[in-house]
Amino acid sequence: MAGARLSGDDEGMTEINILPLVDIILVVLIIFMVTTSYIVSPSIKVNLPDAATGEATAPSSLAVSVLTDGTLLLDGKPVTDLGLREAVRAAKASGKEVVCLIAGDTDARHGDVTRVIDLVKQEGVAKFAINIDPITPVTTPTPAP
Image 1 (cartoon, one colour):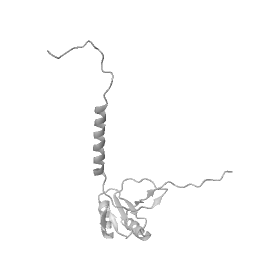
Image 2 (tube, rainbow, N blue to C red):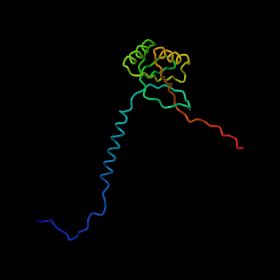
Image 3 (cartoon, rainbow, N blue to C red):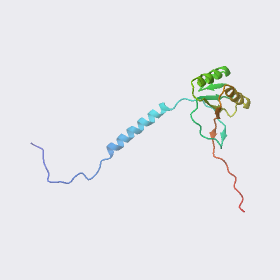
Image 4 (cartoon, rainbow, N blue to C red):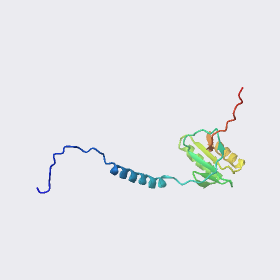
């Protein structure tokens, strides 16, 4: 066996080669960055009003948006008042409790948002929430005694 030598050196490997680990982590990072752009769902931009007292809500059955021109969107698709009523009736017919999340644009008329609230309440929806963008409340300092 030409070329094969056994040395009398019994020292083991004293260093860990981390270069393959770094390569694997970089590949995983690149895969993560590429796939996250496909995971983000498209949405319609609604300029929500800010409020400091908002609370988290459970996932809603129906998401209604009121745009600045009074257009209604149900789950991102344009809908008329009659279409919204039919969607509420269909959701109630499924036997589950119907919850509406109403997102009114900051520049939407108050009357348009009130009309949607009234519409869903007329159809028997007892639970609804107004969608907002949360902000941190500004507190005024109390004077020292």
